[in-house]
Length: 175
Image 1 (cartoon, rainbow, N blue to C red):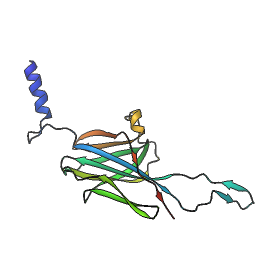
Image 2: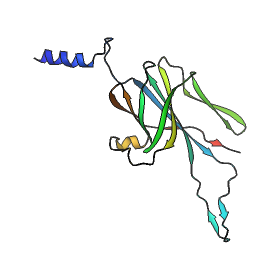
Image 3: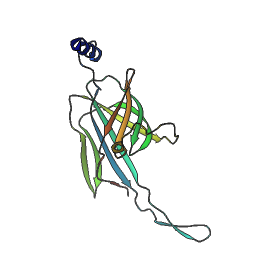
Image 4: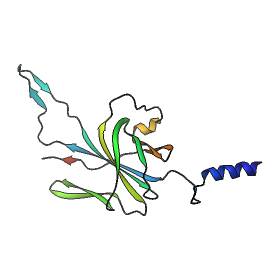
């Protein structure tokens, strides 16, 4: 009986090509980089002559990448970055290694986000925030609210993948 039950479980997990099916995501990478404005006044003068202080809102640009075993497409459902839901799409990363440049004090500084890999790499492109309450955070763990959580589907099954920590790069200082 135990043997039959074990055989049933193995047959359910096996794909037609004979490999055990797991989620196709091998590894996820999340980076953030703050964009610091140049000479922006910290106070403004209203029409009635009153001076008001402006609070600087940090503007952060996120770079999110997913490595998969092969180029089979995964479909994004929801993406949360630090608990905020975003519209997002996927596109293949063209060239590896993936590097970005940042001028730091009149010198060009390069950060390598992903070195070369044998796996297929997708870039998650974040669009605008989703403000409607329709996308619930119920399925997320508390630790997912500090990093990136991705809900995606492969075929008819839904999966979650979490990137626990966002690595922050040197900020961009605009002139």
